[in-house]
Length: 332
Ligand code: TRP
Figure 1 (tube, helix red, strand yellow):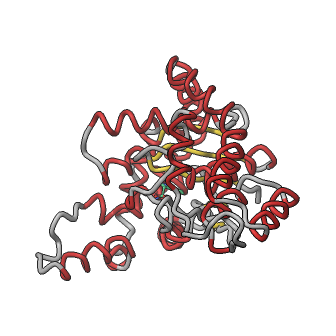
Figure 2: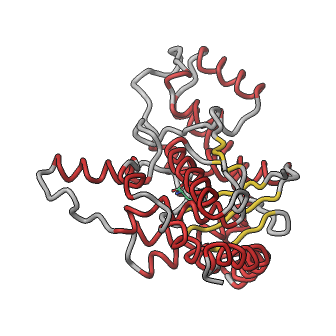
């Protein structure tokens, strides 16, 4: 069986350095190096579960598409599309919903956490929980099964969702015919660097401690200057392994450069100087994509062209396949 790599990006928020190092850069490198069929899409239906301001939804979709293109995603090599441009996905979602045990969804971590938060706060346990949140894993399963994804690169927090997609594929096959659906597996990279944020906690939008990917050079410098250090003076030896500056530097440098900076820490490099070194390193890698990003955002029709091109390629797969599935369940 040929490999089909597929992954989705929920279109909320503005991409930050942690997203770049942990997801965007490795995914693009993998897609450029791989001979698999690669599907990469903007999960904008999923975004609706998390945000309800149409302007925010719209802007985030455009910015995230521009970010991936600016970082070197090749829309000829990867089928790059918007989930909402593929009407077969919500159709498949319903077919899967009808074979999905409610109990399976009751066990989803994200849903359970939301219920627990309500209980802890003394609220009704269903407070503010939409059916979108509850059924989130079914929509995600449809994303994957629609294109017969075999390998799904995701973060650890998403493994359960891929297992649920595999469950649903098996269940569907059991009822309607073996081989109708392909059972996917999660691919988790244990070496995926997780960046620390400005305040020393994990870099995350929800902590407000991120370094935006494509802010101006000036703002990038300012953000780097805000990264917490300690009170050790210039000349005093410093520990690279507990230093956020060193950690982020390592995500952008080669082995030799990392060894040199390790030595500089032992020799007591001043925090101010190290911040300058880190800024230069990040900026050297981001300057060009930042310029491309600005170009693309100034001329967003190229984003639309790329996505329409992707949707066309995706629908060449999804249209005949949904017909096959409709036929299998008796609604051809
Ligand atoms: N739920 C994923 C996330 O939040 C995004 C996503 C949606 C996805 N559909 C997918 C990932 C299908 C992989 C495959 O990260």
